[in-house]
Length: 440
Image (cartoon, rainbow, N blue to C red; front, side, top):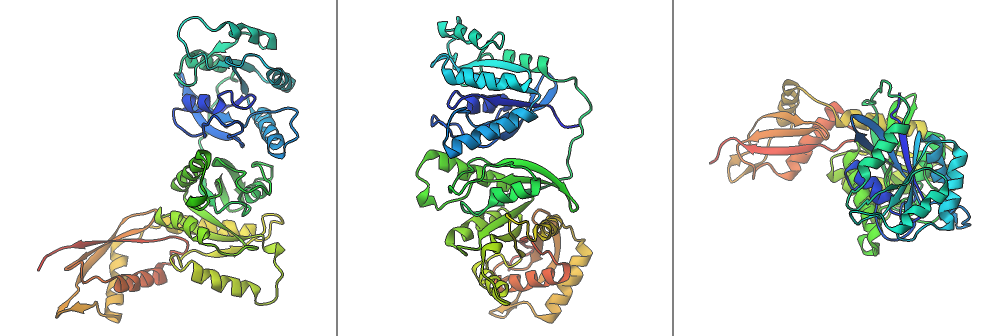
């Protein structure tokens, strides 16, 4: 059974994300004074008195707004409310009770879920501000004074949450899912892909570039297995990153890559390859993650018999630094080749975690060095005594040699090609570590 879910909701800029970060003990949500910063549902794990539950941070609710982003934020918050076991309604003691608070409270009461009223920004120790008491007018029972900045009152808040959680049952942890980060520059269809495979409107989707600012997780299961999809903010050129929120988004996307087993690098078929695509892919390559290049919006391209081959050849040249990454031409809108995408994700994940015995590696090494002699310099020849695999994710091999200087990059590339030729290793970078066994 899944962990119980607790949703943090409220109007914009009352400190929901700051409270979320305080309760989970890490900076997972973006926190800024700009209203509307958190747009999607963000999940974290919270533990209190040996009880573990999932905590959901949501975008601020503006019940009557016609703005496209705000209205979808309201929809995302409603999804969180519908799946929550307990709701924490956050209000701001500094601004006092406002009409939007009453509208949000009325919306929550209709859900029938237990509601814990959190009066945030009570930062002074001692008596609560006089405005605290007007929140009784919401009809949600006793408010709890909290300071998300200093942590005052969070214990009382969590006690109230625990009192309203359903009875504890055996919880099955899912440790077998493949974690997949969906990365790319803005507006390539990353959220649309997550929504397509999860079968629900899990992420906000619009044509406004940069809509997704936080990295969010969605667990899906299909014929290929279980996958945790991490939808990330689109990565922009650094020169375009002007506001601090955007900088946090890039940091979050890098964190998502670090968490992932496989990165799906989304390319927009309509705009083609850009320098930014190369930089985005470079982050995954440098992190040693399994990689799959997904060319999205393929349904929108006018095609003849050679269109795909020509596009593939161009991308192979553009992504020459990661020739191991397989490509698939998909449409998140129609679902075209989504199954093939997951087949490649599984392949990349398995190869990224592949371990090869030392004996087998040295058989390949002996055959490769016999086929092409190691290089020489000033009468001295490179000797490779043996090799072994040091680690996985990515597969990392250690070569013990007589001279590191003689082990030229070109010969390393030759040996890499022989290893890939023998073991496949499609979809994953590999690393070489050179160790000198003797000097002279």
